[in-house]
Image 1 (cartoon, one colour):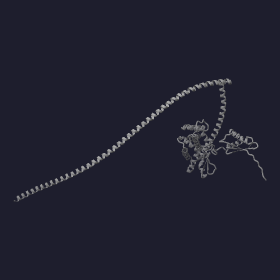
Image 2 (tube, rainbow, N blue to C red):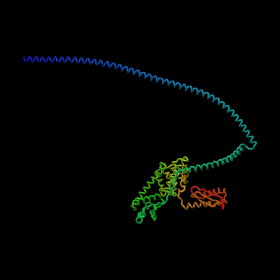
Image 3 (spheres, rainbow, N blue to C red):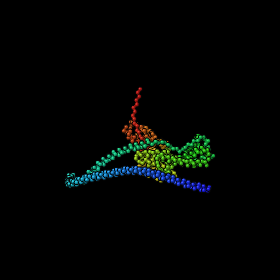
Length: 525
């Protein structure tokens, strides 16, 4: 009974389960159908929207296509219009050229016809002229025959006499013209030369420097003298042997004299003494060491001086050996004048004068700076050669310009002048050396020259007094008014100047001034 109940319950449960499944499937089907319907509706709405958007996009694209078509059409029309315009312009130009060519052809035809007519006219005239020439020749020959008969001379003899007379007359006229021209040229040349020289000298600031053969080394006390002399004079002998300078230690207070003609040696000795005295260690070995170091220092200083000089003057491309030679000129002198300063001055004068004359001023400066390099020889054998020739040889050796080499060699007339630089260097060298105070002269020769000047004046009659003034550059002559007239005073001045010019040797020029005066003195009481 219970089993039946269980079976019934189980059957009922199975049936309920089957019914539940059937019911759930029915619900799912209804939901699915509903979802399908909804999906179809959405799809239909999407399709309708897409159709609407497609229609609008289609309309826009069609509108854009129409606009682009219109733009392209307008551009094409513009291109066509421009082409038509160019073609019309080209046609117009061709028509203009054709008309121009036709007009030129007509002109040429007209000119050719005129030219042919003129040629015919000229031929006709030429024939007439030839006929007239023949007639004139006949008439001329008949006249010559008549003149020969009348004069008794042939045509050749008459021509010869006429030529001779014209020759003498032309010679006289030519001599007068040449004389006037030469006098005018001399006057203008002298004026121009004086102007150029004066301007050049005025533009160059000159300094005066005189070198001596003696240097004075100052010391603080006389006790240092004993240390410099050393035991039995060893220190001073070592210093003299190392430098080649005579060292004079005398009773002069607080001073030692260094004597030598070579300025480089004197400078080496002075600097070495200074270093030894400052250091305090003075003995022969130390002396030799200091002198060697000082020589190297001086050599380096010489090179630096040469470089500075070349840079200051604006000279480029100079050989290092020539630069060193230029630096060595600092320690050389000529007639008491510092050689480097003299060369710098000559270089500046040459540059200015060359610029005034239209010549290359850089080459002129170069030649002026190097003109005296032969005065600083390296070896004893070089001293036998004149300094101008030696300087020229060095310049040629180190590849200088031929004009510069010729100017160096010819500035003392050792060789022939071959360029315009040579007289410029010669003149500027004379200007630099002739300045008052530039060069030192021996006193005796200077006084003798002044006496000789005065003696020349006293050699003429009527001279009362004579005075050489301005370092011998002017001679003032006072004459007796009773013996010398005004006209004779001018002749006397000329004669004295010619006498000085022929009999004496002097730097620069000597101005002769003759003074004549008549005095009437009375005293009122």
